[in-house]
Image (cartoon, rainbow, N blue to C red):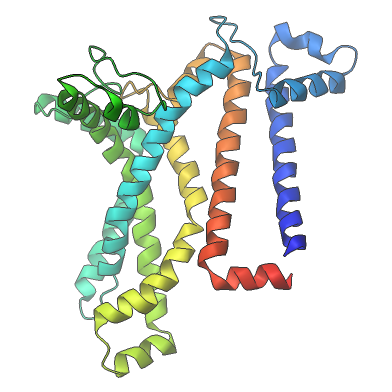
Length: 321
């Protein structure tokens, strides 16, 4: 177990090292940062690493603002989108995947398969403005831009309006909650499509595979109900494997956020990073790449730890290796 832990720790450190090299190379693209390579390019890299360890990401040359403060302002909105989209994808994707594997209804299986194939092929940067335009001309209240109406004053406690809105002590707090949910609804529904289709495909294929296993056939032959087999054997053998897909789905959500945050006026790190690329703010680009990479690495480590707790075969592997 100790050797496996050390091996995973070494892999994480190597990933951080490569990520810091990429971030430092982007930083040197700015002529104003050329002095970091004097007298040697590696001397500036050590200074850069020291600043990162102290939480100092530098300043933006476009506005002179602290990048650390800016990151803490733009990262929570994107994480809020990712978490809510992932939650909705699991709520709708897991039941649809099981429905698509019902043995005595092949037409339903074909329909679910056709649905996720279409969903996976739709470009989200094309769908987002169409959905926003359609909801606007229909007069839907969810056709909103931004996180919430700026007329409402929500104190920043955690940085997530979904959490901070419950600490607002005003008579119209219910209106604030309604406004936050209205602004979150449409962008979350658009962002949910791809991860939900991926979950539907995984659950359907996993369930179809488990149905061919002998212990499932034995359970059915012993007059066990389909619900009992689904819960006791299929669900318990599918969810741990689904957890291993979360890092990849999180990466997909982060990239999708960069594509649609500008469309919905969402003040997240994706919209901010694209604006930094447009204005050639290499300090902001370097900080954004580093922070996004750290988020992906943390999610990957968290999911690996959860897999270790859920799947007994992983525990066995940790002790054997």
